[in-house]
Image (cartoon, rainbow, N blue to C red):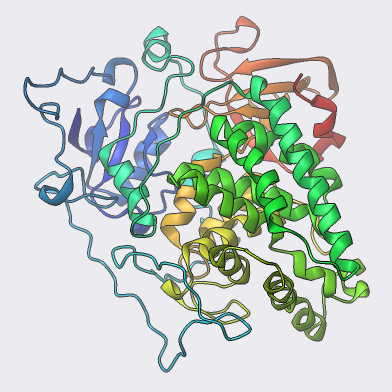
Length: 521
């Protein structure tokens, strides 16, 4: 039940499925979201004349059940057409004849650039992005330089308010209900995958609590393997990629069943993450990202391997670089950048490794505007694995303590990455990454409107700002002797009248809270 609604007529409870212009031309990070307050309506009025509202995903008085399918057809009356008969993808307004058509920008091509090749000269073999997903470069202001540089998420959370909704909301989105996906959302994901890759749609098979023990076993096995790989390489020994594939397979299966559990375990481990443990987090997030996009399991396994091995070349860096506290000098930075080449050299001596895995590792520091390394690729010269790895690697780095910078909250990290989209990262993929892990990812510390601190445990797939959380302190920030689960979608704190909402994100370790003290049992 998609309908065109002028922004002057928007109401709280409407689900915005599409805009009258491409999402990438607006500050809205979330492609498809529920209007929860008047601030969101004001933001939409500022940037759009009209939007497409999906009544079947709206709540309260704005909800309308979809009509029954017409006899003899596979399409519901009024549903947008798909395929060659309709404009598909983000930026087309659900097939509406009055929709603004997206004008595709041409992909910049570097002049006189040699054919893409690995560091040793061997040709690359990864499929490129389809021409319909162009590189877009826009000059993004650095955080803190503009009058209001926070973007949509900043405006949304700067003064986020809870809204009062009754049983209609609860009835329309029951627990464990598979998320409803519009044809536009499906097309947006399909457009990002390489040609010939069939989009998969995954549904959580178990709860996060049930999956945590298996996720922990898979992540711990991967961690042990990574430690052994580092030891073997230091001794000049080779390793068998088949062993990596075996361990990675368990992690992929866990992420397929419920990605929140593996991300929870990865965040639990962040307090003792070392140089190579960083890759373990990247591996989990990359796999969850690929699941969201719809990659088949074989490609999810490749993504997991990329994350696990992307920093393996740091083994060959001088020890003083790895142990230095503070920023590198220009000369030290140039030396540190060579870890990518060192990693490719190590992997070239490994039999049966996938070329796609090699390419993803080699390209995880390439950037859309050509400012990355080691090859300085521009736009679609970077394969999809390289684009995805760059986003996830940066997110994991920002949210963990570094010798020269404190850890950022997940929200601040996502805001920074969204600000760098276009210049450094592929904008549509940044938007999909935010959707895949949530604005406040699993394991994030947050402060509630009550003053209490909580940990995000599981996401609601429709109401992105209403996750299930574990409340771990009182309003005065003293640790609670009995942490309690709270579902922000359905419950008010202690039976009060006011709904509880997320006030702000907190960096890891805030108020001396260690996630490992609150392991899900």
